[in-house]
Image (tube, rainbow, N blue to C red; front, top):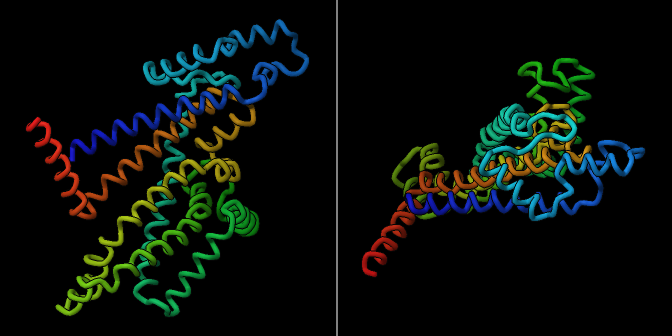
Length: 322
């Protein structure tokens, strides 16, 4: 198991480094001159050259890339924002907890509501409960999240005036973004859980458990759900990464000062250090989260953990023989 964890950690580091090289390369070859955006169209050639030199964008590509990689991964310095004149790393530290909390609460709500809905639909196959869950999932998976967010703002903020539509003044500011992001996720996870449970609902061990007189609740949550939970865990993990990585639109709508809004403003102003820092952080978060999802398989299904241990034992024996 330890060998597998170390292999996945090395792979995660490789993914983060590859993402950093990719985003730097893309931003380097993007058309446009940041110096002209900073100084405006009336700037002289001498002023533009001076700003390019200060920003370090007048150097060759490989020199810039090497400096960027060294500062980011050795010195842990993501640079300074060209327009805010503040540390990118400091700005990320300020905003990451807000975005993480927003995504975490959204996925918790999605899981707590979506998984039981999917189980209930599967155990009442082709009945009104099943049809209701399918209809709910179809509607909210088809409707864009930003449209739902705008409807919530109109109804809860403008009409009823019970929830704020922007900022982070109190816990109430989290309610509308969480609900807007969770509805589509609830429909998706409910439908996915339903499909996974239906694959095991008629399995032999389920029939045997029921024949032994085991309570239906225990049959569902101790025998049926753990075996159907592995693909659901993958879906929950990808949904969480989507919540974190896809917060640009949601944070823009609610003026929520998180990583998404930080990245959105940086893209609009061509603030390359901020863009690179945000993409690296999102890539690192995604890679680490998928690693945790893979490791959780072993705790949900002991057979997978035993397989990891068996593979490590075999490799150790082969090395000893050699």
